[in-house]
Each structure stands twice: as C-alpha cells, then as structure tokens.
Image (tube, rainbow, N blue to C red; front, side, top):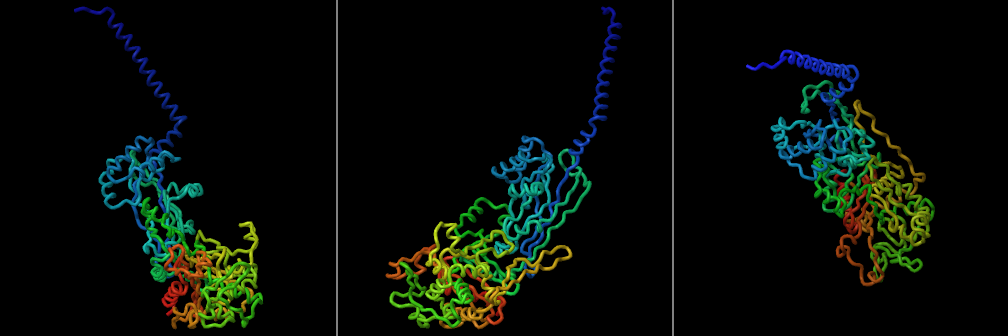
Length: 613
C-alpha cells in the first residue's frame, strides 16, 4: 500500500490550527456575551420583558342614567370583542385578518379601517380591536379556532343598552366613536377603543358617567396567549345620573306625538324639574351601540323631519299668539294700557301702505262680527280671543325696546341653562340687532308684527314652557333642570336652583284670567279643550309660515289642509294647571300642524288630565 510522506506531521499541524480556530471562536463568543451582560443587559432585559409582559386596560363600567322614579334608561351589558396583539409587520397582520374573516364575516370596508388603525398606531404593543359586540355564533366559531390563531384573543367588554329604545332618546342621548379632538384631549380613549357620549346626557355628563379604567399586567407566551396575571388594579365605575323626567309620562307624551313633527315640554312650576321632554320624530339610540350601518345613518340624516335634532331645545319657532302674553305684560308694567283699558278691534289695521289683518278677518266684517265681543276689546278678552288688531296697536304703543326687555326677563332670547348641549338662544330682535345683521333700520310695522309673535322673533319650546311657568307662579323666575342628582358613593345633595323674582309682580292675575277664559269660556280660542279636572288655563298660537297676498284674501284664503305640508301653519299651545294652584306648565309645538286650537290645545288637555286628574 502506498504511504503518504510526513502524514503524521500534517495531521498534527491541522489539529493545531483547528484548536487555535476553536479557541478564537469561543473567545469571541465569550467576549460578546460579556459585553452584552455588562453593557447591554438593561436594554435586552426591557426587550425581553416587553415580549413577555402585556399591559391590558380594564374598561370601567359606565354609570347608569335613571329617571326620577329610578327606572333605568341607560345601562351596561356584557359583550365580547376580538383583538390582535403583538404583531409587528403588516403582512403578518393581514394574514391574521384574512384567517379571522374566514371564520366570521368582516367586509372589505371594515378590513381597510382595521389596516389603517394598524399602520397609524403610535405604539406597536397596543392591541387592535378587530370586531366588537360579537354574536354568540361568532363567539363560538372563534373559540373553536382560537388555538390556530396566534396573537388573537377574545376579551369581555361592555356595551351600552337603552331599554326604553326611542323614549327620551334626545334627553338620554347616544354613544359613538371618539373624534380626533376627543382623543387628543384624552388619549386613553384610543387605548380603550371605547365609545363616548355624543348627545344628550351621555354627552353632557361624559366625564362623570365614564369612570376610570383599571389595568392588568399579564405574562404571555410568544403567541400572545395569557399565561398568568401578574398584577391587577380594578377600574372605578362611573357615577349614576338621576334625571327629573318620568319615563311613564314620557311614554304617554311620545304616544301623543306619533306621526307628528314637533315638541312637548312639561315642567314643574315650583322647582323647574322637567317631567317630560319629547321631540318628534325621534330615534333608537341602540342603533349606535351595535355600530350603525351606513344605510341606517343615511335614513336618519336625510330625513327631512330631522329625527336627530332635539326640537325642544334646538328648534327655533315663531311663538305666534303665545307671545301676546309678553306684549300685554310689557304694556301693563309700562303703563301703556290700564287693566280696564280698551282698544278698537277692526278686521285690519292699516299702517303706511301695508294692511295688518286680524286672524278672524272676513271680507266685509271684522272680528267683532264673528266673535262675541264688540269693537272695544280689553286685555282679558284680547288674550281669550287672541285679537290680533288689539296687539298690533298695543305693540306699536309699547315700542320694540320695551317688548324686548320684558321678553328677556321671561327667559326669551337666551339659553335656558338646561344641562343639554345644542340648546339654541332663539331671537328677540330689536333696532340694534337689525342694524348689525341686516344693515337696515327698524320699522314700526316690524314692531306690530312682533306684537303677534311673528316676524324675526323666534323661541324654543323649552323657552315657551319656562315663560309659561313664570306666568303661572306670578313672576317667580325658575331655571329648568333635567337632573335630580349625581349618585356618587355616599350620595350627594340635590343641586338647588336659584329662583329669582321678576321685579314687578302686578298684573299676573289679569293675564292668567285671560288664559283661563281662553280655555274655559265659550268665546275662548281653546274652549273645545275644556275639562273640569283639572281646570287649566292657556294660550293658543297659530303661526303663519307663508305670505298671504291681498288677492288671496279677496278671493278666499286657502284652507290649511289644502296646502302642501311645508306651507301649513304651525300649531302651538302653552298652559298651566291646576288654575288655582299651579303645579305643571307645558308647551306644545306641532310643526305644520295647523290650528293651535284644534291640534295643540287638545294634546295639552290630555297631558294635564294624565298627570293631575
């Protein structure tokens, strides 16, 4: 056999070189480990800790909203949500979403929104909500497949529920996704991925209702599965908010407005408690809890009757003849007319080149020929029969500035102060207002038309109810309240609302007597709504929303029912009961409802009977 020369020497040399190489390799590894141990240990400890420890927030239970009799109007229900956590790159994340969407339905628009959330998140370790409020069949399907879905977990959450559905929806409000401005103000909203109050009490008392989140520190494995709970800090429940409204009364009021567009406000004249606030049409706030569809949203916002608008505080209407109460009071305190004074009632009043017609104008006869009074009309009869001619002349004598001052003393022209967002001021116009906004001077004719509650003048149904309550209690000015108290642990006293008194308390009995006659005397405009229990007083209003030409007056005014809906009169009524010991005041406004006497007053009658009989 052939033998290689110097083979032993060759092998010895290779072994030596190999041992040198091994030594160098292990030396470098040792030095690297020493470097990491000595100089980088803190950094890698944090990285390892982040891979091992997960911080999850515990959403707080939101406070309940309850009525004056402790009926729950808004409460919390358990729900289940699916989340993804611990995924660093978009490709892996998209793959997980596709896997989930093969188990439960997620449409393309929802997927795009989820991907945007992933790409725009500021912290990569925050969990991302994929779908909330899982249905039971979805929950069951996911649980079966969860073992094959790394970094996916199901979390128990909370959803808002409104057991009375559309009843008092504008008062209670609804919840929706926070806006960017909300998150900027409170970044924790993004971490919780929670909804916030968007209207009504839910919005006005958001901070009180929300509570404070808790935390859980969890040890998780590489797939994001929980191994054990390291620490836990419980969340703090939000505060319950107790309202003044009576949901049973609200239900009844709601039934009276069925298929009508308008508002009813019922107020306690003694303390300002709002017993019912109904705006019609309304909506079901539960639609927003279950993530409202685009179709459902479009149906709400494109509805010409504006179901999302709380007309009780945001609807601004000409008050019509209900404003005559203000004009008469202003005339009396400014000594423009005496309690036993009279003004001539004609079928029309001419000023300049314009005719101002009385509501009961006939072609050849005046009001006096169609009613029971003669040409001379006093204050009480003018209220009872709503004589326009009387108030055209009276307003001209009083002057717009005096009328405006009186109106503002009764709460018109400014927000009532109710704890609901979206309340409007209404408008009590005067000379300076017109000069500022229209760049025009004020005309006497505008004072006259203001005297019958039309023209630029507007008021909300809430303001009209407050105005009526002030008349009912002889000038004690009240401020309406929607909540009784905030039920914090241990309880707190009910807020005491300031009661002011209008400076001059005279003449209220005269005006109230006119309101009594309007309902309880055969010649009154609301006589057909008279009841004996309770005896109530009030003032009708029929607001013209179109211009009636001289030609139409000559040939005959078109009946309200023959006009297109949007050109029909608004129907109004304000009143209080019982007459001798007032407890309740209200306003009824029916958009394009027609006559205040025929439409609004009968509704008021039913409410007074329901509450007090």
